[in-house]
Image 1 (tube, rainbow, N blue to C red):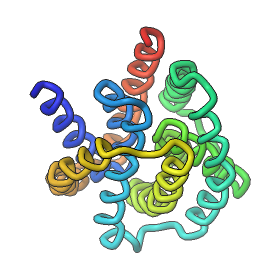
Image 2 (image 1 turned 90 degrees about the vertical axis):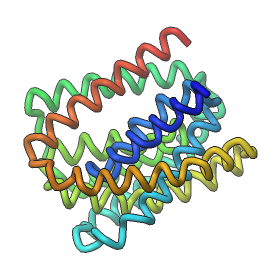
Image 3 (image 1 turned 180 degrees about the horizontal axis):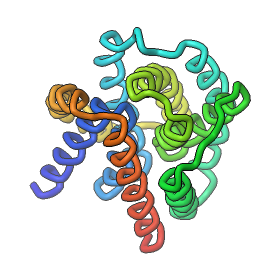
Length: 240
């Protein structure tokens, strides 16, 4: 029962964050789902639920999508996906999580000290590639997108819409890739099915919370979320 309660809390909080910010589900859910499931199971549950969230929200916010940017992210991610699955099946997952945690913490510091980056077509492709790599390797496409958008002062509505649209593509491709190369099991699909009502409750709450976020609050929340995730991954990789 304790594990079930933890699972419900993880999915509910992550769903609220995803809906209200556009990026929070994978960043919040994947590290903590690893407490309850094997890496393959945690990643695939995250991907399935993230697809459901993106499908549920995309029609309401499609007018805010940056189509050109979305195309660049998508093309870049196609290059990153196979490298991500190669990392997942061939490299120690604790060592990889350690590397990701260090990157998250360093980049969070850069953002806190007002790090800026000028958006270019090439950088759009690179960010898409890293996002694709992280999706198939650890189920977390959000950090590269979030760091890039925040560093370029992207308006939160555009960030949320473009990110969700990109997730529709990258999560679908990543789920297929994961199943082909690592397989799947009944636990993944049953757990995802049970989580769907919790996800929709989180969507409802998150939609209300989105109206309360101004740009300054959004940036502060970004720093907190990234740093907490980075420290958690660091701690988990060191004790793993």
